[in-house]
Length: 467
Image: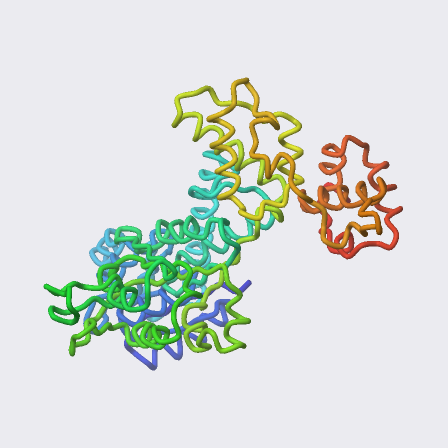
C-alpha cells in the first residue's frame, strides 16, 4: 500500500513541485496551505507522515508541529525550512518533529527522511499492539473477544478512532455497542473531553429535542431558565446517540441540519450556537430497510454512517462466549466477595450450543445469577436459568421436520445439534469435535452423511485448524 504524505506549505508553486517529487519517491501526496486546513484534513483521513514548512501564514509550522504531537502522538512530522540552521533544527525537534530537511528539497534526502519516518510510525504502532497483547490478548479496552470477527471490529475501532468522522455502530441488542463507542472515544484525540450518552428511544420527541439542542428561558411551561443541549455540552468530546433508529421523523431533519452546520438553535431561541462534538450513533434496527421504506432519512443516514462498525451476535463469535463468561465470572465473584468458580464442561457445551438471543447482556445476567446461587467450585447446569439450561429449541428452524405425531427422529436431532455446534465455533471442526465428544474423522463422516447438504454447512468458514 502506498504511504500517504500530507504536505503543508502556503507556496502553491512549491506544493505542485513537491507533490511531483513525492510521487516520484513512491508516496501518495496531498497538500494544504494552512495549519487549520491541515488539521481538518487529518481529522477526515489517515496519513502516514506530515511534511510541514516552518514559515506558514498564521499558525507557524512549529506551532502546528506541537499541535500534531499532542493530538496524534504516533504521527511523525518532518519539518522543512530554507534556513538550515542548528537553532531551527533544535526548535523543530523540541516542538515534536521527527526529522528536519532543508529547501530546496533534495529528492534522495527527502525520500530517506520520509521512509525513516514511516518505519518509525510502524514500529511504534507494533509496540503498542504488543503491549496490549501482553496485558490481555483477548481483551480490547473493556471488550472481550479473540474471534476473527471481533479482531476485525478491533482493527476498525483503532483506525476509526484516529479520524473525526461520524460512526454508526450496528448490531443486535446486547452486543456491546456502547462499549465500542466508549473505546472509540478513549482512543481518539477527543479522549480528554466529555463522553455523553443519550438513548433516543428513552425520551419522547419534545423532550429529546430539548435535550439535544437545549432551550431558552420561557420556551415552554417548565423552562424557568436556559439550558445548553447535549450537542453543545459534548463539545471537545463525543456524543453517543443510542438507538438512533427510533428517532422521530420530525426530529431527524433538525439533527441533520445541526450536524451539517455544526450549530444548534435551542428550543425557543433565535441564535445559532456552534458546537464541536463528534457524534457516534448506534442502532439495532436495519436502517437500510428503514431508508428504503421512508422511515429514516437517507441524507441523515449518510451523514451518520461515514464509518460503519457492525457488531456480530454472540452466537456468531465461537469461543468468545467462553472468554466472556470467564471474565464475567471473575467480575461478579469479586463484587459478591466469593471465590471465582470454574466453568464445568457441561456448562461450556451449553454456552457454545445456546443461541443467546439476548447476546452478551443475557450472558451477563446468566453469570450473575449463577455466581449468586452456585455453591460449588464449578458453575453447573443447575446454576443456570431454566431458559438456558433447557431451551425450547437450539436447532436451526430448517433443521427439524416435524412428523404428523410431532415426533422427531434421533438422526434429525443429531443433525441439528452438529450444525448448531459447528456454527457456534465459527466452523472450527477440531473444536466442534471436542465439544461433541467425537474425533475429527467421525465429525467429517457425520457432515458428509447430511443429506441434503444444508445451507448452514455450506456457509461455514474454514479455519487454519481445518487445513
